[in-house]
Length: 120
Image 1 (tube, rainbow, N blue to C red):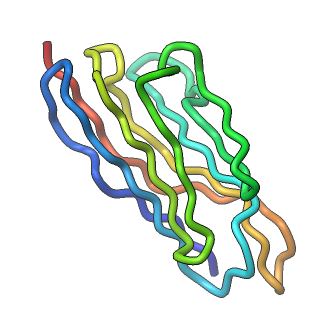
Image 2 (image 1 turned 60 degrees about the vertical axis):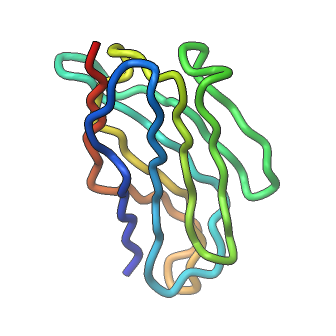
């Protein structure tokens, strides 16, 4: 069974940096794509960044130039480097990945989320 576990969240002052990591476990053949989403209180979950196994990336306008997404298929991990953090980046951040397994084929999986809080 595939599981995604995020780590790296926490409390940081505005202008600071955090690095989120997402580790996939289970009998995985490959990670086809990975994305980071966030959900602030009272708001809908939104896409922050996504990357394909080929390295193509997409970012939300609000984080462009500040966040960088990466993926390591050999290690079955992905990271989100967040710089120049702003209070409006405060949210629970979720990892989402499209993963291929021999038993299930390609399917999407979610992590449990990690809290990021940026103080002003």
